[in-house]
Length: 200
Image (tube, rainbow, N blue to C red; front, side, top):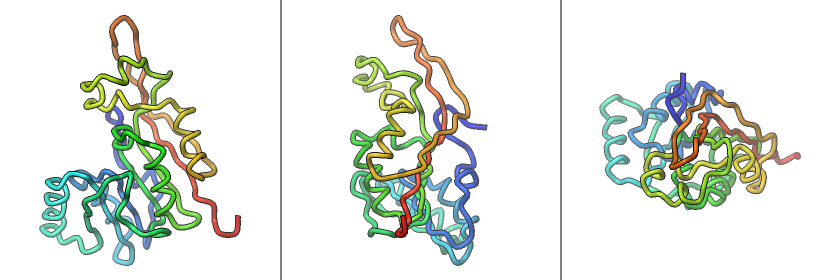
């Protein structure tokens, strides 16, 4: 079951398999990274990227304490991911991309670091309708991971613009919030896209 805006067991839902190279954008304390590490096995690799030094340090320490040899955490901006081109089989993110100011740039970076045929699996908040400008500009709503939410159409278009194909969304739940005199529906879902293979 999902929490509001986030999805539990994202790595399993992402179809990560043994031997995959996985990148988690906005890895935080490393929960999804460690989950993915168990799926990729000894021949796979998982890299978490986060812009908070404290989180990177804490996650690195946890990995060391738990003996994870197939994971690492890097400090970096999601709009300038510190990884080379064609690096990963799967890029995941769990309720983080909606917090970024330039989502198009984040999706472009995800596209860049993916190998041909690789895919992005982004669990995030999805607005049922375009959010009121007053809500989008509210700092508190951004901190609650609501103010930056895109609609399903906006997410799909952003991924397609970045170069992804076979873009689709899956909705897992929704919640209604009150904003001034309006009711706003925010959904929890997964947005997926595929980087075309070299033969495409």
